[in-house]
Length: 103
Image (cartoon, rainbow, N blue to C red; front, side, top):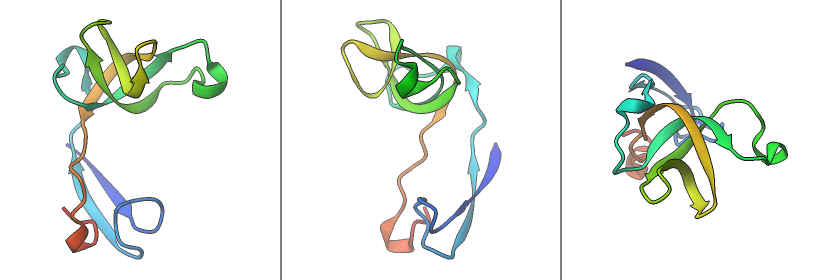
């Protein structure tokens, strides 16, 4: 497990001025990824649109598309973009709005 610290007020789900330490799972090889749920994928989009995506690996919320036999980013269309994913981890649970973002 990797430990990260989330600070409020910088686009996070933590109340401004608060800091919450959370335990996150480490990145796992893509071969071990579940193919029946949305997960966090790390890789390069298989796209010729480098202006939009760039050539560097990034992290995306995504899922396995059984029909195309490919990893897709959430919100993708039937033509992609697909992701040449190398690693994955579970998506974090949603913040609890009654506790200022703490889970």
